[in-house]
Structures are given as C-alpha cells and as structure tokens.
Length: 442
Ligand code: PLP
Image 1 (cartoon, rainbow, N blue to C red):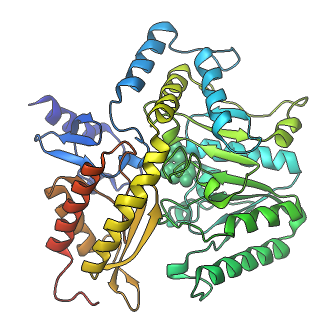
Image 2 (image 1 turned 90 degrees about the vertical axis):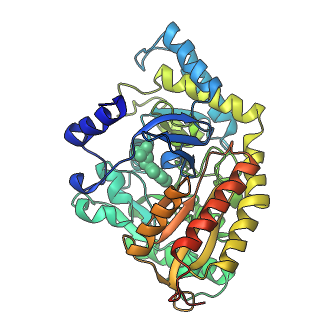
Image 3 (image 1 turned 60 degrees about the vertical axis):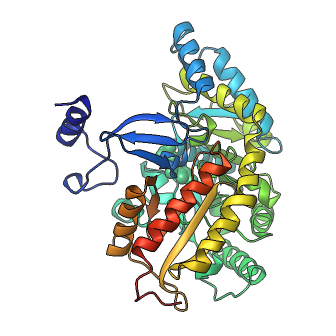
C-alpha cells in the first residue's frame, strides 16, 4: 500500500470530518502543493481555485512563510501569552498599522470563530448590553456563539444557544428581500429595515451589530455603495458597537487590505483570521479601537487562550504581511479583479445560460447558478447539475469551490494572470460539458 493509500484508509477509519456525514464523503488525498497547484494521490495536478477554505492567500508553500516558520521553530517554538515575544509584537504592529482608523490593539485568537466570540464579549462588557444583531446571509464560525450569530442553515441544528442573537436581512439585490430593483433602492430599504429592527429590539439592549464587510460563504454579496456608512451611522446614533468580520474578506482578498475600506468606514472592532498568515499556522484575532481598549485598561478583560499569539503563527503572519507589502499583493488582487475575473466571468455569463449573476471584487468572485434566468430559481445545492459540474471541473484539472447553488472563484492572490485565465478556460469547458443542456433557458 502506498503512503497516500494508507493515509486515505486511516482517514476513513479515524478522522472525523467537519460538517460531513462521515460515510458519505470521499475526500481527495493531497500529496503535494506549490503556489496555486495541488497534486492528488494519482498524480493529477489541480489548479486550486478555492485557496482551500479561502485562506492560502499567498498560495501553497510560499518560501518566505515556510522559512519564517522554520526560523521561529528553531529559535522559540512556543511561549505563553503572558510573556512578550518578538514575533507576536511585530505581527501586532504590522496588523495595527494596516487596519483602518484607531484599531490599534490586537488580541490574538486561534481562528475566526473565537475572534468573533471575543469581539462580542468585548462589545457586551463595553456597552453593558447583551443583544447582538447579525445578518441571515452570513457565516461567523462553528463555535456555539459564533454559529448562533451565523445566519446560514448550519445554525439550525445548533440554535439552542441563541440567547441575545437577533438576525436581520442585509442587502442582496439579485435576490432582494425588499423587492428593490436598483442598488440605491436596495441600500435604502436595507438600512430602513435595520433601523426598524434596532427600534423594535430596543436600542438600549443592543451591544453590537456584527457584519461581514462582504458576506463570503453566503455568496460574496458586495454591499451597495452607502450601506456600510449607513450601518455605521445607525450604530453611532444608538451607541452600538460595529464589529466588522473580515475573516474571509480581509488581508487583500477583496482588493483592499480590509474590505470595509470599500465602504469608507471604520468599525469599532475588526475580526480577522485566514489570510493574516495564509493559514499556514492557525491564527485569528480582534483589532480593538481606543475606546473599547480603554474599558479594559484598568479592569481585567475576562478572556484568554493558551495559544493567544502563538509565535509560529505570528512569525507566519509577519512573513505574510511583509511579502504582501513587498510584492504589492493587494494592488495585484484589485487588478486581477478588474482585468481578469470581472470581465472574463461576465463574458462566461453571456455564453452560459445557467449563470444568473456574477458578483465580486478583487480575487473574491461568485457565480449564482440558476435553472431559469427569468425566475432566478437556484440550482439545487446537492442536485445533479452541481455535482456534475464539480466533477467536470476536477476532470479538467480545476479544484472548484461549490456551495449552495454557487461556484466561488477564490484562488490565491498570487496567481499569475495567465494561470487565472487558464483556470477560467477550464471552468468554461466544465460548464459547457455539464450545464449547457437543451433544458437550459435563456
Ligand atoms: N467569519 C467568516 C466570515 C468566515 O468566513 C469564517 C470561516 O469561514 C469564520 C468567521 C470562522 O473562522 P474559523 O473557521 O477560523 O473559526
């Protein structure tokens, strides 16, 4: 038995996988990875259009990050959060210098869910209020509070710990909950709706509004101009803490250091993970503004983690951020969106009747797949079309990110323009193989 076959057999026997019916999955064994490419156990080369779970922003095995982790491991693998560590201090400085406004204090966590948990805890203690408003179309993590703040259906089996969580509709023009027909209308109505939810829940009970700056897993829902500014104004009016969840959209993915910059606002707390160090070692965190920091300046913050600011993870963050700066990765991501992904995906939509909507910015794109463009009826999440499309992409050498009725196109930000074009050619072929059947309606 080869090493790869042994890994597969042991996985199936002993590894319990996230979000899965354990006996209904057939995971791919990855034996090698380099830049935007992966190899499976049969030697097939796959172009990674997923960045795994949208986190390998600098691609696989980036030499600067690997070397930084190795250097840190040789020097000091680990040290408790109570001690000062050079990698942690430097990572905090680099993050604080890039987050907008006065988000200058960094609390490190192990990932995105616990970053959101801590942000909510800080907001509750800072305001003395308990409710948190978040969007139905959202994902904020898998831990108990984070999954209750999440809007997507993964909350349903877990929503027995939902005390103080309230959901509202964010803007989503293509499937407008407000029957809007223009971006401006959607923005105005979504803000009017949020204003009513705040009024009816009681502003004095609301600690925070938690929002993904661009909801990612829910469909890459770029908010209309003015929406985030409107949320900021409502929060200011009622003394509510505005938490921006930048776990997926942050660190260049959306063509800015942080996606909230597209909206021109500064949140009170900003949560991050994934792209902060390309996910090479688990790391997340909360960037805290001066006002909330002050609440805990002379009173202890009642929270912490054994691995808060782990030196290996922080060394990876320092190398990631320095590389992003030196190689102009954020500007590259914006340029790839403007010159490759946007135009190419819109051209694909002209040819394939099943593409109902193209959304995105930077290297953060979604295709909304529908049976019928007129009714916008979505393709079934685990239906035959999407299953076949996923298989066709793999056959053509492309690892796709499929979720609900959508394909998300989210390769590493370091992908060369030619490689991005090649991946989109593969996607074009896969769509032609599977979806352009006679039943497709224009
Ligand atoms: N927030 C957002 C926007 C996410 O996309 C995710 C993960 O996909 C999380 C939070 C949770 O992060 P983690 O899986 O690191 O806990």
